[in-house]
Image (cartoon, rainbow, N blue to C red; front, side):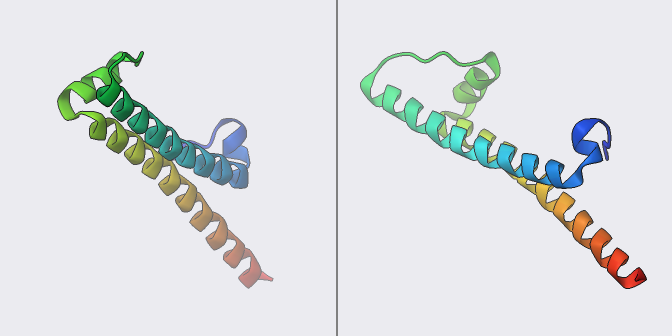
Amino acid sequence: MDFKGGFLGKYPIANMIVSGIIGVAFWIYGIFKYLKILSLEENGGGISMPRIFWKIYDLFGAKGILVFFILGGVFFIYRSFSEWKKIKIKNCLNISKK
């Protein structure tokens, strides 16, 4: 599945950077959410989360939420790395043609 529409499809470097930033943001948000859930489990209290996160929490606990966000981050980091490889190969082919 190779989507090349819209703003990011026209600018592969922007696609690479945005995907990398989203991946790192997933990791950071996942760590903060995990630590907040652990704190609430120890001290008591409640937290508002979307239904999908509640299902993950019910099935796997706080570590499940952390793993969910880590995997989401890995997906976007992989997309960023794949885009970087495409740019690198394209640049190498352009250099060899000159």
